[in-house]
Structure formats: structure tokens, C-alpha cells
Amino acid sequence: MTSSINVMAKVCAETRIVPPQWALQEQLLFETLNKAAKEFVERYTHPDGTLIWFDHWPGMDGSDDPYEGFMNLTLLYVLGGSSELYEVSRKIWDGITWQWTEYGQLHREFDAYYDWMHHGEGYLYLYFLGLAGPATLKDRQRAVNFARMYTGEDPEAPNYDSDRKLIRSPLNGSRGPRFEVDEEDWSTHRGILDDYLAPYEDIPGVDFESMKCAWSNDGIYKHIIRMMNERMNRGDVPLNLNATGLITHAFLHTGEQKLKNWVIEYVDAWQDRTRLNGGIIPDNIGLTGQIGEYNDGKWWGGYYGWRWPHGFMTIIEPLTNACMNTVLLTGDMNGLWLAREQLDANWKLGREQDGKWLVPYKHFDSGWTDFREALPKYPIYLWTMSMADEDLDRVERIAKDHDWNEVIVPAFSGRDPRTGRETKHYIGNTQPWFQYIRGFNPDYPKRILSANFEMIGNQLAKMRSPEGDPRSWTEHYSEGMYSAIHIWQEMCPLYFEGLVQLTLGGPMHISHGGMQHGRVRYFDATAERPGLPVGVSALVEKLESDSMTLHLVNTSTFDDRELIVQAGVFGEHSFGLGEIIDQLGKVLGSVEVNGKWLHVSMPAGTGITLRLSMERYVNEPSYDLPWPSPQQIIRGRSKL
Image (tube, rainbow, N blue to C red; front, side):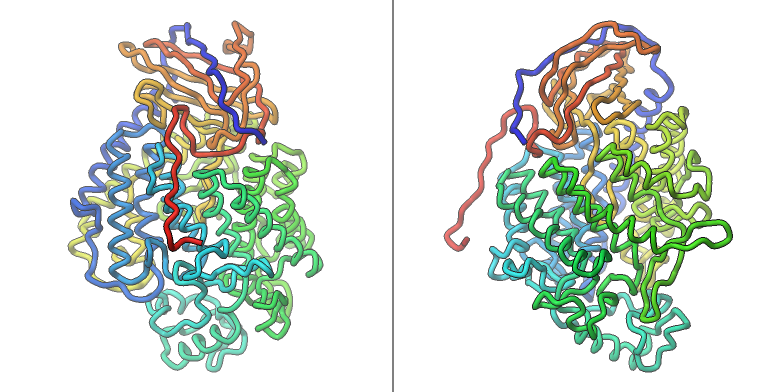
């Protein structure tokens, strides 16, 4: 891979057009989201960026949720939202970090200890801030400090065993591995987990077959905590693969090769464990590196593993994230092996029932169970990265249990009860975008942008309701009620899946810690900031393994605009020849780009469609902007 800085090629839009509907819809969304962001911030934060919330919050849970509620302020800015969002989103990140430090969940700006499902959710905010450059000294220093907590270089946080290539506990963070929890740690979850499967099949007083476990019963709760400490809180789990996102984030800031090497090393270690276990990834590795070391030799039954609580979902998500990070850093599509292998192994374990192929989501002591239809979104993510037929086959072998062209309007952050689509972070339309980008869903841009606008209205109504008033909330921990800690996610109006998909040319991030991948991103060349210039709309119309088609429109009839198109969200790709084409695909002109940036002049009222040849994953990825910015890291006397 190379570090590519080219003499920037330039092209000018010359065709005057009437803006198509999708282009006007994008501008209406930006305008609406900018106003909604201001109202959301005023409703739920103090002037110093802290949140209007209680004077204490117990347990180890919670720091991820406020970050999740406000992280899209940053992502909106990255796409082209109001310039005010840059400082606002930074202030709120600082405010949340200070506030949850005072509550006791954070230490040295990072979660003291929790799992990488929740770390992954919360630190999406950090990854978006990386894209919202220019990076500050604090951004780079913080990224390096956080990475050291997982590379074995931070003596206060010895999370990683570099000899055995394992993260030493499922519960980890700035205070290091948490081998034992107490009753206070899980206190906020007790009511929620009453309706969940028991984490073990032999908890005294619990009928495992009932598929419920009374965490709110004090006696049972004591048994659960004791058994977790004995069996579950030491050693490595697949969920920890989400930590590769944090290390990738630090690499994108610094380019330090040892960070790339750590990601490769850690993913390779899990590949070795999977091969040793016959092709199924084990979900618990002891501190000596032995599979099932604290679990009577069972490869199933670990923390967020094959048995409890979600099964395959919390196996395949961190694998997919880690494999995509590996390809981003190396350019080697073999980096997708671990995720591909588990999708295939899971598929082969399936069975036919009522004319449908169902795959197992859980493994109990009695064997594979919880058979359901496979979820297409994970192979879609892999295909979007690889553009390989084998990944397309992994998508297409899944029966369409509903109309994949259908656009849904998520009503909550969870799962759509009708279509079965996951809607965490209100992301619910990966399938119809996949159909569109392959040419099977031509009116998707208009429909998804309309759906996004509808959802913003729904969220604003919810936010403005009496239940949305933060000063009326009462303290309790139950899920599904407005005053639980997930409240900000449920009240947030800043959801814009369509803008991400259509402008960047990729699905929205995986909610539990995925980087925001995409075929392109944009910069305002005049303002020298990330995002589309005001009035400019973008639509990625087609993706091929070696090219893409991009439609740009300046919807303003008064203002000329200048923008820079970057090959890859992280500059990981390189453009070759750019062809200007008409609606029928006829070539009207061309430009030799031969680099990762293309400067596009957009006079008022013009549009341009570009077919851009591409070499993918050939550049060293980074958060760099098209303009020089100083690179600096402080080397303190106490650092190793």
C-alpha cells in the first residue's frame, strides 16, 4: 500500500439541469437535520456540553448510551451538515466524558471496564470525530493513549497478553481486565435481564427451559454473579475483536505500523483458535490460551457467546468488523476469511423447516438450537468491501422472507417486528440499498429520503412530547421506558441512513463498533472542511469492483461551489480515468485523475455524472484531509 498525495486533477460541471427530486430531497434533509440538531442539543444538554441527567448513575453500564445518543451530530457534519456542528459535537463529547467520569464509569477519558459490544457502540463517536478533522493534538494523543490500553503498552491497563495474543477479560478498559464483578456492577440490568435466557444451564433456582432468568431475585442474582466470576470473566471472547476498531482509529490518526500489525496479529490468533476448534469459533479462551478453560472444556458458553444472551449476532458482528478493518489496513481480501468462514459454517449447520432454510443462533449443552432465517446484512457488508462473487453468493443464498426492495421507517432502536430487520441506531434499510446499487430498485433514492424525512418528523414529535422532557424523567433502569438510559437514542431526531448510503456509496456502519466504510467522501474546497458544500447533492448510482458512477448536482441557481471527491472514506482507494457521461452512458469528456482526490467545480445550477475507474485498497488509509495539517504526538516522561 502507498501513501498517495497527487497533484489534484480538476473537472468542471458544464451542463445546466433542473435538479432531480432526489437532489432536492437531500438538501431538504440537510436543512431539516441542521435545525433538528440545534433543537435536540438545546433540549437535552447544558451550555457546557453536559447532559441534563441525574446526580448519580450506578453500575458499570451507561457510558456508551449518551455517546450513542449524540454521535450523529458529528456524522452529520462529516456529510455536509452545519459548520456549527463541529464545535458542538466536540463540546458534547467532552461534556459526556467529564460527566460519566464523575459518575464513576469512565477513568482517564475511557470506560473503566465493560464489554466490547458497549465499547463498540460508544466509541463510534470517536471514529466519527476522526472523520470530522482537522485532527487536533488532543485527538491524536487520545487515540494513541486509548490504543495503548489494548496493545500491552499501558501498565495501568494490562488488557492484552502479547505472548498468548489474547485480551484477558471480556470486561476491560482503562483500569485493565475485570476478572471479578460485584452485585453493583450489574445493578442497572437486573430488571431488563429478567426476560432473557439464563447465562448458564445449572443456576440454582432457575428453570433453564423457561428461557427466562429472575435476575431481580436476590438469591438467584448472587448465584449468577458468583458463577460469572468463576466461569465467564477471565480470558478472551470473540466480542473483543471489536477492539480492532479502536486500534484502527489510532492508525488512521498516526500511521504507526505497529498498530496495523496488532490488528493482523489479533485476528490471526482468532483464526488459529477457529481452526483448532474444527471451523467453529470458540467463545471462551482461558488465560493460558486453552479453549473452555473455565467452562469444563466447553467451547460454548462464554460472555456474549454462543449461548448467552444473543448468540450468533454477537459472534458475527465483531468478526465482520475486525475482518473489514483488516482489509482496510492491508488491502488483502483474505482478511475477510474469519467472517466468511463463520457464515459458511453457520449455513452448513442449518436445516429446512416449513420450506425455509434456518440456521442456528445458539449452542446449548444439548447442541445447536434457536434456528432462524439467516440475516443478509453481514454478507452484504462483506460484498460491499470485496465486490466478489463468493460474497454475493452468500447474500443470494438467503431466501427473501419479505420484499427486500421495501423501505421501512424504524420506530425504535431494536428490531422491526414485521420484517425482522435489525434497526439498532435506526438503521433498517441495508437490503433495499443493496438492491438499488445492483440495479434492482431504481426508485430507492426518492423513497429512502422520504422515509428519512418521515422518521425525523416522528422523532421530533417524540422529543417534543411531555415524555421527552428530561426534567420530568424519573430514575429507573427498565428497558423500553423513556427514562431509561437509552433515552437519548430514542429521542434523537438525527437519523439519516439514506444520506449515508446515497452519498458515500456504502451501507451505514455496523452499530456495535463498525467503521463507516464507503466508496467516496467529500470536502468543501472553499471552506476547507469535510462534507458536501451547501446546495450540492451527491448520488452514488453504481458500484463495480473497478469503477463507480457518481452524480453531482448543484441545486443552487445563484451560488457556484467547489468540492473535492475522495476515493474511499479513508482515502484507501485511487481514481484512474474519470469519464463525464450523459443519461444514456455516452462519454462526453474525460479527465485523468490517477490519485485519491478529484476537484470538481460546480457552477450554479449545473450537474455532472462521472464514471470513475478505481483501484481499491491501494493507499494507506488515514483521516488526512486534502490540506496539510501538522502531525504531532506528545511523548511524556511516564510513557513506555
